[in-house]
Image (tube, rainbow over all chains, first blue to last red; front, side):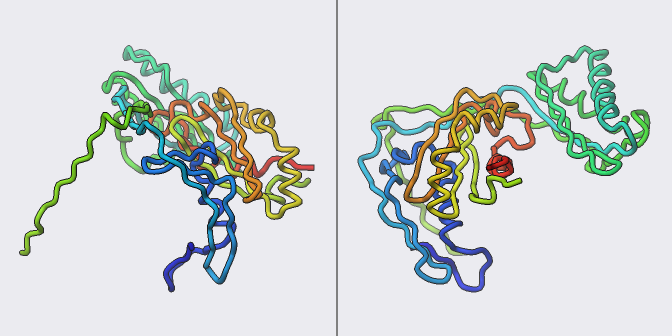
Length: 197
Length: 101
């Protein structure tokens, strides 16, 4: 039975429960968890009252012989910056802005194989541009972050929206989900006595 | 012009470097239409700008739902991708805007 506490927001309906069942789902007949393999094939979802939905018919079978390991590895650095461009010929301005940034970085010896510019808009007379980069070298990404603010005064006319300060350089992680034999994992639980202050 | 959102709703998210899109019909008749008409190939073509390796399609007739797994769609996944929707949260909303006869 799915329901919710009184005097709280949200809504529990057949629609919201079905959405949640499908959220981040792979093969619905073999939903793997550490404790059980679930088949959602014959699941029934019924509204049985206001904000009350019954979910039945999920079939469990033994869990897989493996466990999932979410391995990550540091693979460089990343950042992203946004700017607003105002005026006309906004796509051209955006392209010009990108080319100014990367040609100045090239002058400093940095080239970026991983870069992405997304345009949001244009709406009426303005567009939001989002530039994201990643690089093996932290220094390269730092150099990129220093090329954004100068565009407001020395880039294309009508470049603005630089309000959040210099973008932060963040580590970039590669994500490697893998399976390991569950026998290789020995769970250990430690209890700690709560200390009354 | 009718759109997919006129007969269905949905939810999407990430599974590592893959994305999934659940599309759920509002009623059984529309599910039967979806089940016949909404193919993996269509979904893949609709998101032609994503680096999709293949689309796996699963049917959940009890829920009047289809689940699409877009293998490789997230370009390395949430922690690696430079895209603004690195976790594929908006993909269902995009797909629901598809024209539908």
